[in-house]
Image (tube, rainbow, N blue to C red; front, side, top):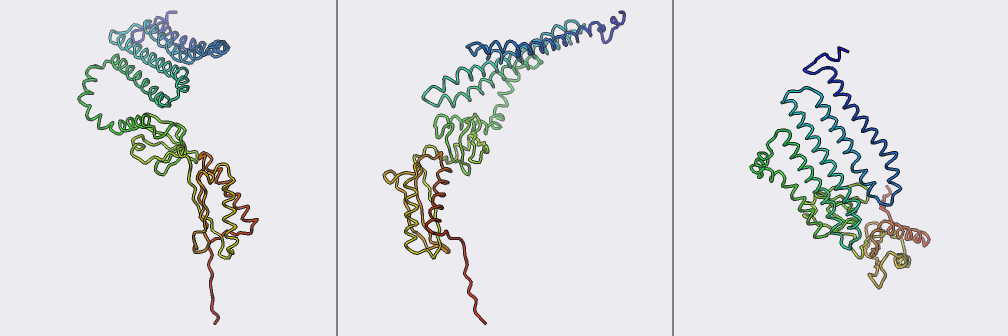
Length: 354
């Protein structure tokens, strides 16, 4: 096959075919490894008592396949006749890919170890400080690994890392100014963790937003509102704002008015107050008269209604909506049975004859 000896760009067709055959073989080997891992090794690992083998499979699977591809690229590169400069570049590319693969593996390994081994330990401790610090540590370690990986990659790309680091010193002031908000948010997050104005799962109010704390991150705090939407608040704003921790309230005050019609006789006004007080006193989630007694009073002759002011204290604030629904439904039902009518805006018009 003389045509295989034809030379193009300094290499024969045989060399090019060998180069691409090695790359294709590595791709196929990677596919085989993934198939064997998914269909044989994982099934065997699932039968063991330890979770370590499952964890190692999750961590090494992707980086291992990528490593085989990088090694194949290096081996395939040896089959070509390249200039010294091009061979050096290809060698540096292989080193950069190896650095990226090692960084990827370390990120996955550290993250998996923290999640599967450290996190269960923090969950058993009495303090919740470690529960808040763990997400910080996960992100910080990832950032450090990625930073070191980038240094190795830049070094192999031909950049003088020492000069770059020195340049960071010169531009440090500009960077600090640009990162002012970022640093403020990070320190705000640390303040939240150590000062503990709220914890994960607490129901809080920040400004116009009310909901449950789902995550306290390095930069932001995530709140799930009562409407099941997510609000992301910068930590610097959290430390600057007035925060009301609803979950830590022993009781929650509920205050509202009931308006009944003007033609309601005094006896029925009194009966209306008795009904409301009876409903409140019998509800399990409302503080009793020995704790924080509910109050019901006829307080106002309004424009179109006789107003009864109602005040009670809720014990379990997580049942906020359920309690209000039950109380209001019982009041409505008993008012209807007693013939007590709720008022609504009305207007009386007098017309003169002639």
